[in-house]
Every structure is written in C-alpha cells, then in structure tokens.
Amino acid sequence: MCGYEYDPAVGDLEHGIAAGTPFEELPDDWICPLCGVGKENFTVAE
Image (cartoon, rainbow, N blue to C red; front, side, top):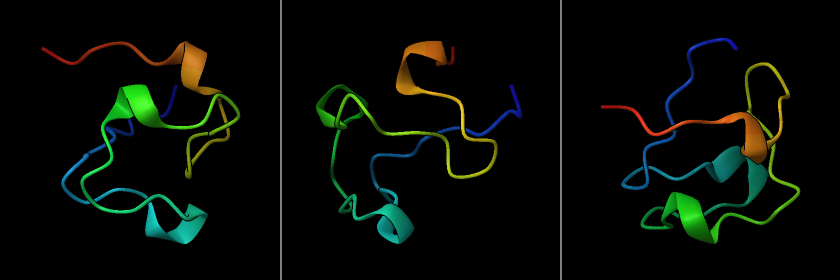
C-alpha cells in the first residue's frame, strides 16, 4: 500500500467523506484516494 493514513478529523472531502467521519463508518466501497486500494486492505496504525 502507499502509506496513506485516513484521518477522521479531516475526512476525505474529495470523495464526499465529511470531517469527523470515523473509519468504521466509511462506506464499504470507499477506496484510498492515493492508490485506490479498498477499505478492507487498511490496518490500524499504532
């Protein structure tokens, strides 16, 4: 993967995801805005 980290405080405005949206509430068909991998390929950053 490309290393993109979803930040719920920022959201993904380019793809219609409002700031404050937790990762768990992203639509199942959401994809990484940088590389296009699906939500199921993300892991929790520690």
